[in-house]
Image (cartoon, rainbow, N blue to C red; front, side, top):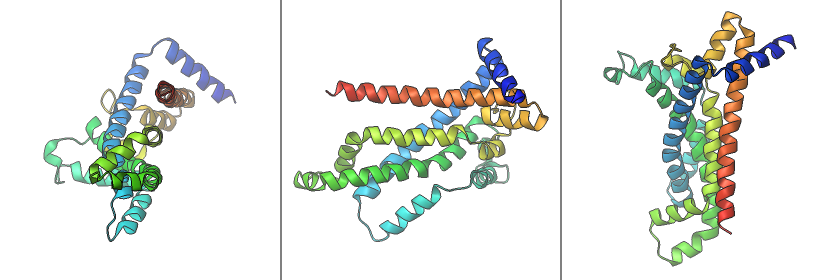
Amino acid sequence: MNEILQGMIAAGHLIVTFDSDLIEISLRSLRVTLSAVALASLIGIPLGAWLAVKRFRHRRAAIALLNALMGLPPVAVGLIVYLLLSRAGPFGVLGLLFTPTAMIIAQVIIVTPLIASIAHQAMRELWAEYHDLLISLNATRWQRIGAIVRDGRRTLLTAALAGFGRGIGEVGAIMIVGGNIDHATRVLTTAIALETGKGDFALALGLGFVLIGLAIAVNWLIHSLSRTEAGSQW
C-alpha cells in the first residue's frame, strides 16, 4: 500500500511539475500508437468491409485466419520485424531498426487484425441489412463498401479505440525493435519495465498511472466527439 501511495505521489509530482522527460516519453508514446492505429485503420477497415461484401471460395478460411491473427504474440511479431529490419535482413538497408518507425511497423502488424476483425463483424451486419437496397441500385462493390462504412462509422471508431488500447499498452515488440533508447525510442511501457527492473517501483507506478490516464483521456475525447457527431444528426 505504501508503494502505491508513493507511486501516486510520484505521478502527481511529475505531472504538476511538467517533467520534461515525462512529457517527451508521453508524447512519443502517443505519436507512435496513434500513427500505428491510423495506418492499421486504413488497412483493417477496408479489409473488414471487403470480407463482409465479397464472396469467394476460401472466404471462411480467410475470416478464421483473420480472427486467429488477433492473438499474435507481440514478442514474436517484434522478433520477425527485428529480423526483417536488421542489417542481415531484406530491409536492413533502410536503417529503420531502433527507431520510432520500427515501433510503428510492429504495432501496425499487431493492431490491424483486431481492427479488421471488429470491422468485419460490424460491416457484416450492415451488409445483411442493406444488401438488397444496394444491389437494386446497381452499386459497384466499392460503392457498397463505402456506403456501409459511412453508416457504421461509430462502430468503426470503437474498433479503432480497441486498437489504440492494445497498442498503447504494448511492451514486448516495442522493446525488441525500439531498443528502449533514451530520448529516441523510450515510451511509457518500456520506461515502466526499465524502472521496475531497477527496483524504482514508485516511479514505475507513477509512469503507470500516467499511462492509464493517457489511455482514458484519448478514449474519452474520441467518445465525446462521437457523441457530438451523433447529436448533430438530429
